[in-house]
Length: 79
Image (cartoon, rainbow, N blue to C red; front, side, top):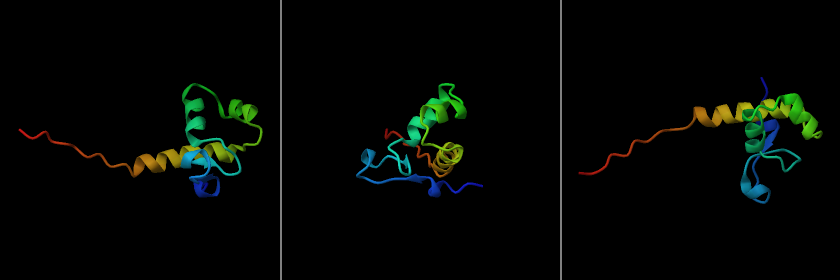
């Protein structure tokens, strides 16, 4: 399995700290959005020739990891 940390970084000086693919200014968010809009990994690789297929896979693994650690807190309205 790919370790997303080998492909993804966050640096407050690049894209305000949003997670990006290392060595680029391409955000994980952009890749996930493109996929959700129907772009294939091949389409994305054509749009961004600096990327590799493992970079796209790392974005998906990163997103899954973030969601897996998400906690939902229910707020109860005081009566």
